[in-house]
Amino acid sequence: MRSYHVRTLGCQMNVHDSERMAGLLQSNGYVPVIDVPEHAQRATSAGDEGADVVVINTCSVRENAATRLFGNLGQLASVKRERPGMQIAVGGCLAQQMRQGIIDKAPWVDVVFGTHNLDVLPVLLERSRHNADAQVEIEESLKVFPSTLPTRRDSHWAAWVSISVGCNNTCTFCIVPQLRGKERDRRPGDVLAEVGAVVSEGALEVTLLGQNVNSYGVSFGDRGAFAKLLRACGEIDGLERVRFTSPHPAAFTDDVIDAMAETHNVMPSLHMPLQSGSDAVLRAMRRSYRSAKFLGILERVRDRMPEAAITTDIIVGFPGETDQDFEDTLRVVEESRFSSAFTFQYSPRPNTPAADREDQIPADVVAERYARLIELQERIGTAENEACEGREVEVVVSEGLGRKDGATARISGRARDNRLVHVAVPAGAKEPRPGDVVISVITHGAPHHLVADSAQYSLRRTRAGDIWEAAKAAPPAGVSLGMPSIRVGA
Ligand code: SF4
Image (cartoon, rainbow, N blue to C red; front, side, top):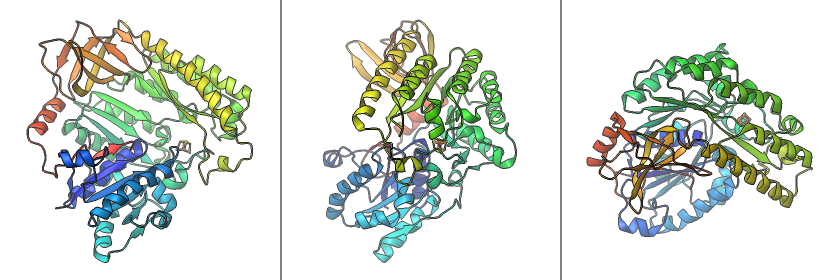
């Protein structure tokens, strides 16, 4: 019996794919690494060196992706010297991009596979062991929709459900279309069947996942398909929360806003990537909306869902960005009132059009602009969170009683609008379990989270909580080494 561990270095799509890799390995007889014995804890903070197979699921979108990959591989090299039977596999976007180059730089890697052929992972591991040779297999287009593969979900109460893979856009900073290919949509019936299945297994929250969810349906001739999908999710018994990521401002239509507002279980939260508030920079990025359109979408969303929390992505220092362009971004951020923002300093990604531009912005200018943006967003995020004080909040628990601050024991979880909330559990109250739902009142808004230390507190125990408790009482068979078998953000 061989054990495995998956390290996930990327975005939500990588997390989804990692769950498939784990499912594939388990259906081929591998067992997850689950509890940490002392020697493994001492060995490394990562803790997965005891696994017979370590899979690294890479990302090309995040900064320093290659540095992070080879940092991970360097660390595993010394482990492998001590345990020659161990195998290392590298998959995901960077594997799709670098291919044999990974083996050339790290000859101790056993398997390299791409984004289009997750299904071959067990076969390649076997073949590599048998032949005592590295195996590299990359496909140019998708053969098997990853969602049809076996899965091992990391959360019992929340699930990712992929509605499409790939992207038809050509944003000049982004490598995704080259690595994930053209958009391919799943049929609505398949998506809804998977949503129904995960709910019947205990999930109460589903996040619909695609690189550009609003263009869902174009490939089968139904431009209204995404709004219809949201409404259909509203019909699924037991599904309490529906979220989606990522939409694209260019394709975000009012029928989706209406479906969000009118479907009881679609949550009032929206992640809407701005990238830049300058129309000139948006044009250079080949993003086909302009700032006025973006602000118009936010206005209409808030008109229909006044309590919606809106988050975003912003890139600072795109090639050619002038002081005025950056001031435009600050203006749009000020007007948008984001509850939080993922902010990035532009750094060229090899093989993207923007990487070849000669008007790259000096690093000190980018850093200075970035600091100003962070300062502005911190102020806005704090004010938006403070405005929540006094409101009732419903939280799905993701972490049980962990932090004890004097007499106050708090659980953590996400509100309906996806804000992170720490909720005080009154002394003597029944302990909430991950997947349970608590209701309280916000007493403090901090820059990045809310605190609910109110005496008004109630707990709803859920089937998801029951499942967590049952699993805790009788953990699944596995090799006792560790942490969740899928780890994000190594
Ligand atoms: S919409 Fe643009 S940024 Fe998003 S995946 Fe497609 S090309 Fe990349």
